[in-house]
Length: 285
Image (cartoon, rainbow, N blue to C red; front, side):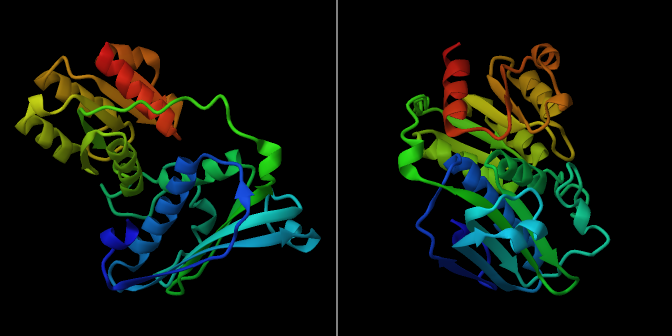
């Protein structure tokens, strides 16, 4: 999927040798990879270069434990995404995982990508590091603790994926999230129209309002927030069900949701089960 969406001026290399297991949601791990690879692409989009993706086993001993924050000794799986791009300035490298911090131009990002990655890694009991230098590329390393498959067993409480054939408009300014959500929904049988620009999404909806059965939009976006986009869409067609997603619940609450006519609020990261059930629920109501 990455190869099809990234220009040929960027060489994607992979070295995947681990056969170990970690405890995590597959969609969230996918989200980590897509975010890191998308950032690597952006660092090289003007000049081209090499994106290197590695997955390998590593044992964390006392020496490494002292160098990596919030990590415990023992076997880990290490995911490394490196690029040969413009690098990260030393003055800002300590801030790149902060919410809303971004070096992208106005209207090109919200600064939530790496913050969400950091949150998912922590949920998995792992750790993430970055090394970089101006004009010297960047390398992100994500460490996940290894689990024994027989000890974890099957997740008997996992909720079922609910399928459908309706048309969903997916809106998020983060390319990786749009790609993941679209892939999940297409796999469930839905027709998907996606956009990384809220104004473009409004134009698409306005052209054929009856085309869409449900709208799934992010809250924090440049130009128009998810609530603003929802209000505009509902002004065109008041009956269309809208699901709003956010990574930070303080951005929006149930009161704002009800006042805006939005049907559901989902907190990121969102599992395929939660997304599929939310879509079925708002459609059936």
